[in-house]
Length: 257
Image 1 (cartoon, rainbow, N blue to C red):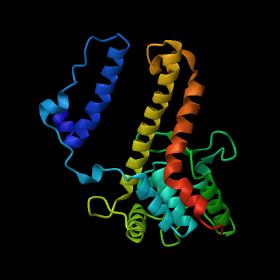
Image 2: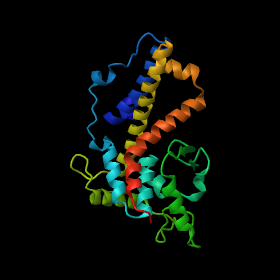
Image 3: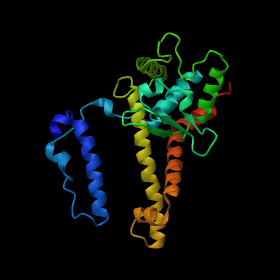
Image 4: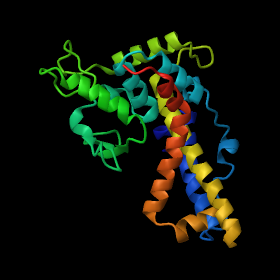
């Protein structure tokens, strides 16, 4: 059943990693004696053969952003790498999805998504988003899409257009991954990689607090002494720092329009 539903090694590894992390958590908290999947990937010899699984580096994202001369293309880079959207989600972005842009919790609301309705926190790129929206709003015929298209019956650009523009930006920026121009989902993978690194950095900071207080671990500090809201704020701040490494310097050095 598992082999039938997960046809590629990469898919099996992704699924197994999720379950392995869950077992690790049980063991750490004394609710399990061992992790039965600890050596599963080595035992079965699964490998990630697809080079498309590689994420962009922060330097790649910065180069793409620098190569984006228009507000539209800058927003495209932010949507893919700064928000972690899929190509189709970026293509269909509409102003009605923008929630709380002037609040402490700006986000994008999705009524339909791969895994159901959800929201995406806008941790970076608000200035580009607002500038793009304001520029479009000057046209009385604007249909509300952030990437509108008068040639499409849907009213917005297609996923293929996002991919083509992304490849064009990569060509202009001289960005390559293993000798090939990157694809948009590599920018999405950058977002996830950055988030994992941000979370790890946060735990590293809490380790110092744990040591000072004689707590067992950073996780104990996080779970016992910080509220869910405090943890969420800390994660968001850590992620903003990672995104700033890729985008902030480029934005700061760009002349005003």
